[in-house]
Image (tube, rainbow, N blue to C red; front, side, top):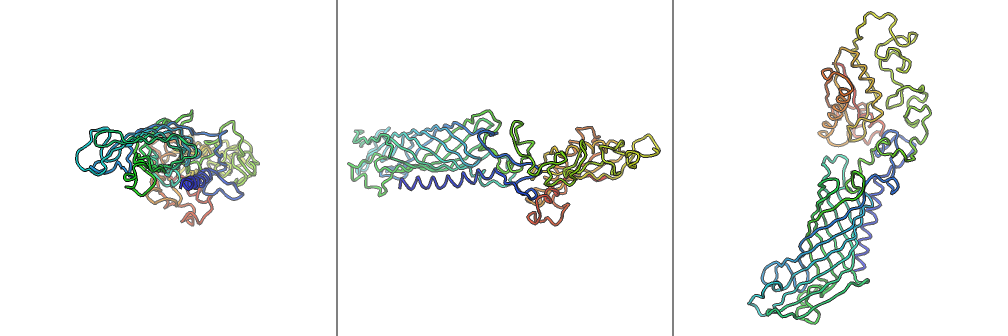
Length: 484
């Protein structure tokens, strides 16, 4: 039985750790970006050398143990009462991945069981083996910690990510002293078991954690302890009548505790509180350390415009030209002269006059009624403005300021997640762009923001999203403008 516990714990730990580690890795290939990568960035794997999260913690707590399976029990004893003991634990916790960790834990406590509480005076009454017992124990164990909230998290989960469900299982060694008393308070027997290297016990259970802040977690746990010992309850083999009340040879108990975890380290967040799905969509400009060597473009960037050749639609962009997300040089006024060479960026003009009108009719800004700025795209489940968006948006600032018109900023999504969630996400994207423009000098009265969710697809054939390559779904996650 002891061996089987070890095998079960190992079986739980190995696949969980493997799955959890894999979930923050990205496999590069020669096709368009897949569901787990976006833009031109590769995602950096989590290593000890380049880690960005704290992964150590110290935990401590206290609670109540109740002997449930034994010859003498704590739950509904001979007097119909529950006998409560006390327990405490302290552990050193190491997170291996976002969903799996290992804890080295020390437990100490006392269970109380039998016909009466040995701390109280014995009651009068029945004559059938009216004995009480208490057991003081110490235990050292190694526990596997599975973070089910991270393991099963969905990309459309809208929780604030402050609660986490954990599962624990592990083995260790147990030492105890068991005391037994009769009705007169006389000690009848003392069972003593020291720590033994080859003697194991097991425990398993679940805990619910609440993140108080970046340093402190509050946790309530319920553990079930399998002692593997028939004398733990104080029944004693020499008292054969008592020791035969329960056929099972292991005296087991529940242990309910409330504790705190102090997260150690210099980083802003702990690995166990990191949302693994966000890791999949991190762009290089967010993830990479400036001192970290990372291969950005697998096939290179021939024109050095910041867009990898894998999906650059204009491979010969002139040096210094600003480009959109597809690597195409910007031409804000759509007059055929890119902004790099256009002397009148917001006013259409012929190529031979460097993009400026031949005979201006007025010194006032030219009124433009339509604007078609493409390439303002977003990562999955995000309204964050990417660095590749800023050149387009900066041109939009100039464009709108040179116009007497007003514009509607329209947000859209792909078809993942629910329609209601996508509607709210599209509104956040539109407002994110609107706020950027206002912050950079556009009159707020010229702008209005609306979201159209998944009802305004650039590629309508991408419903559901699995029917299309990721670059089409990414193009559906966009913001664009309409003149009012």
